[in-house]
Image (cartoon, rainbow, N blue to C red; front, side, top):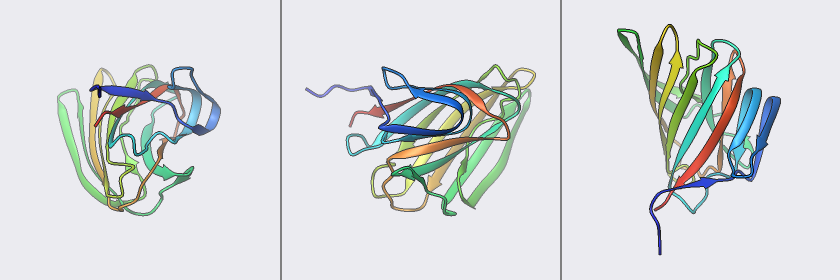
Length: 182
């Protein structure tokens, strides 16, 4: 009998730039002082859609980018588009739609190094169709900041993983990938 819900997935492998990253016994990945973290083998034919939960802290102000990957190789073509919103204090800004980028500039202004996290929803990354993503993240700058992004990737390619990277500072924390039952 099929059950509804999210299933925690274990990457087949990881790659990182930084101090350390390890796959825990339950499948989540703990990382320390990393500027880049790739999770391989998390997207498969078993699920169409995925939820990724990230929490951590940074060594200073940082913004996070995402690239889709396959076989440990990032998709770096100018095929990413995004729409970004940010609310800080009483100000809501919408920098506008951006196309032709080589990554999704997703999340994250972690001004306060202790408070940052995000939930990522990937739609159809392993299917041979364009992929979409929606991100809701929180950072801190004299109080909470909310960051929201939606993104599309125009190629009808199948991907098995993704790469998170930070600029200009590194991050430590934990990330977990969940498959959404069909």
